[in-house]
Image 1 (cartoon, rainbow, N blue to C red):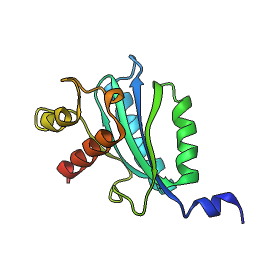
Image 2 (image 1 turned 90 degrees about the vertical axis):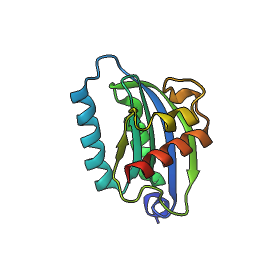
Image 3 (image 1 turned 180 degrees about the horizontal axis):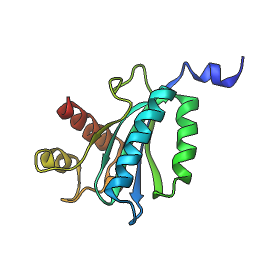
Image 4 (image 1 turned 120 degrees about the vertical axis):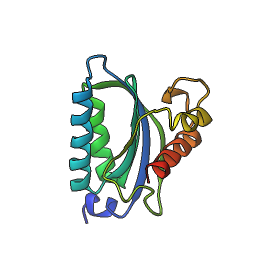
Length: 145
């Protein structure tokens, strides 16, 4: 039995933060989001992404082998840098099974959610611990419905 078949039964979640490169435009971001939605759907990956002009915070979930392949491609993606894994855990079930990639950005309407989990007024995912990152992403996804 090969490892891909075995790993397909192990569902994991990984949350990471990264810094957007300064030349990433709104058009680039829309391409990133569309690419993620298409590729994730094809690879059995679901998740949640939040982005402001400076930072990405993303939680992805799926088969361990697929998440590891995606991590490799994220590390070499030139649209962001300083990727740091905040949390990795095994799952019994998916949190975001309805979305190949759900998305929320900081807005006036959800500012209280960001502030609830942040140690600063501005959104900086590098300052979030695993529990805070999970809580933030979960509340944002519930708000998105």
